[in-house]
Image 1 (cartoon, helix red, strand yellow):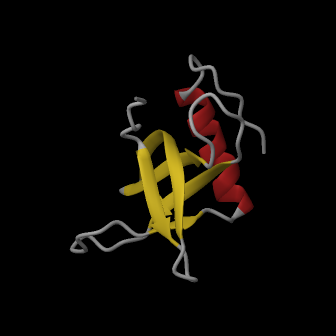
Image 2 (image 1 turned 120 degrees about the vertical axis):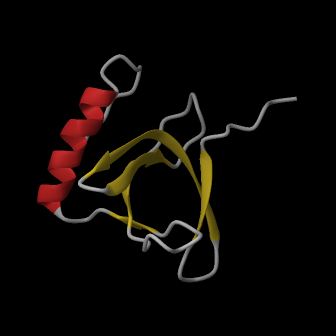
Length: 93
């Protein structure tokens, strides 16, 4: 029996569907949390996305949105590439 990864998160879309993402890395910049996630389980190729925590401090659940601003995305990609330089993960924009 395969052990379920602890770094899997499930997001609820606007359409009410559950979508699973696997967290590759996490960082905090300027008091904001960011996640680098993929849509593929470990060992499979998939798409990577950067999520930004936009929830208020008093909210019980984290609220994430996809980073879409190109300048912010480029800066974050550099940070995540540095964090993952020893991992066997290739990031492409």
